[in-house]
Image 1: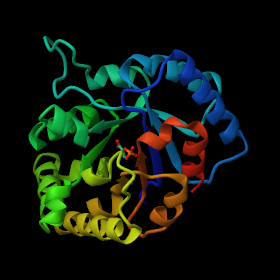
Image 2: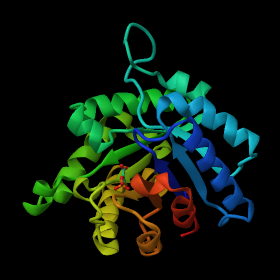
Image 3: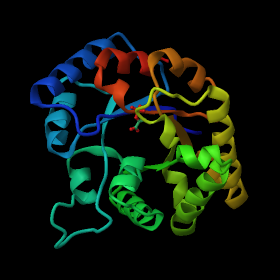
Length: 252
Ligand code: PEP
């Protein structure tokens, strides 16, 4: 069975007061019930993980899990500024995003580093959310599928059948934070291409991996996207900062 999940990525946003309000609002919204069989998570910046873990516990928010936005490719040691997966697990994280396009582009993270990070996340007992996606130039030159297949292939090479315990987030770079959402059919076609690529490797892996769409998801486009057969939920950036909007997307 594939998971159905919505994950909010706050990126470098939030503060102690606004985080508290966000969790309180989401707790109130989720109290009245959420669609069954779905999972929801939020990924605050590292310094707020402990605060958010405490708030989630205080509000008995069974529907909401915690995730982190990145992790180190190393287990422990002299890596100033890095945060290990074991630390994130101790902070009650269930998911860790790796290979977000902002890290690929601004921090020059290559597929090999991303796969090493995913392995750390798995070894610590959490679920990596591995981001892949093509840039506008790659899309415009007709290379979207080739680029995404290349990124997935590098993960398969390292993770092999452990990919069955990961989530993949297809996030076209041209759609992130731009308001230019991929049409439901364009997103579905890419999700299908990824699923077929996984099936070429192993049918079992393909049938287990949740593939999330990310890129300018809002409550008014989420229903159509999530209705697609190979779209197993969403990774939501900007819209997840507004708790009411996040709730509406979760309801979708
Ligand atoms: C993201 O950063 O993962 C993302 C999908 O951002 P946005 O929803 O703002 O496009």
